[in-house]
Length: 335
Image (cartoon, rainbow, N blue to C red; front, side, top):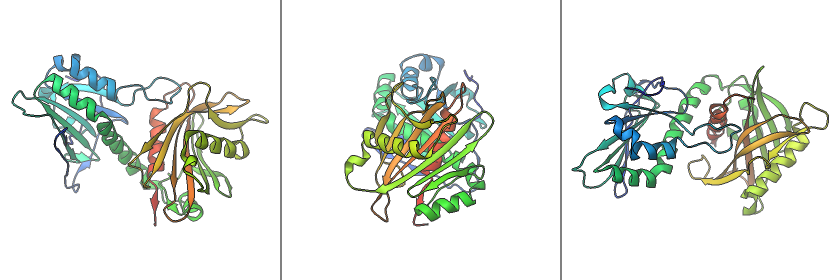
C-alpha cells in the first residue's frame, strides 16, 4: 500500500549498470499524459522490509535529501513507496518510477531505463541486484545520474504546460535581443531592459518569480567562477533591480548560506555553470532562492548569466524554483 499521499504513477525502465548500460526510447505516440505532482517519485518495492531497511534508507538519503539553497528545508524529491502487489495500471502512469528488484540469481547489478513507456513524459528506473548490499552499492555509485534523469522528466513536464502559452511578445523580444528562443509563459512581463540586461517577472498577490538575463564579452575562464558570477549579478541588480524602499536593491545573499556552483553537462550549451543560493533586498526584508546558469553564446564571444528567482514568503519554494530552472533549460539557439 502507498505510505504517503501520491497523485499518480508512471513506468519508465532505465538500465544503467556498473558494468553495462543500456537505454531505450519507447515510441511516444499515442501516450496518455503522465500523472503525479511536481518532484514526486514513486518507489516500487517488493515488501515493507526493503523500504524500512538499507534499500529505503539509501534512496531517502540520495533522492529525498534536503535541496540546497532554499530558505526552509524541502526535499529534492517527494518520495512515496508501494509494494509490487499494489502496483496497478493507474500507478504505472506516474511520471517518475523507481522499481526495486532483488534477484539472488542476478550475476551483476543492473539499472534499466525506459522513457515514456506508459505515459509521457515519464522516467522509469529499475534496479536489479542479487542482494540489498549490491543494491546500495550500485545505487550510491549512480545516484547523481538517476537524479539527473528524474530532473529532466520534471523539466519536460513543466515545459509541456508552459509551451501552450509561450508564443508571446516577451519570447520574441528575448529572441531579438539575445539570439535564442526561450519558453516563457504569457503571464510574464519585461520590467527593465538595458544594453546587456533584461529583467522579466511575474507577480501575484502572494508570490513572485522572475528572470534576470545578463550578457557581456567573454574574456577569461575566470568569468565562470562563483565569485565572478556573484559579482556580475550584484553589479547589474544594484543598478537595475530596485527594491520597494528608497535606496533598496536586489543582491545575492552570502550571509545566510554560501552560494554553490557546479558544472552541468546537460545544459543546451556545450558548457554551463549552475549557481544556487539565496537572494535578498538590501535595506529591506524581501528574499528567496535563486538558480543561475552561466554559458557562452555559440555564435559570438559573449558570456550569458541567467538567474531565475522566487519570492514566496513562508511557503514552499522548491517547485516554483524548478519552474524557473525549466524555463532557462528551454533555451534553443539558431532558431
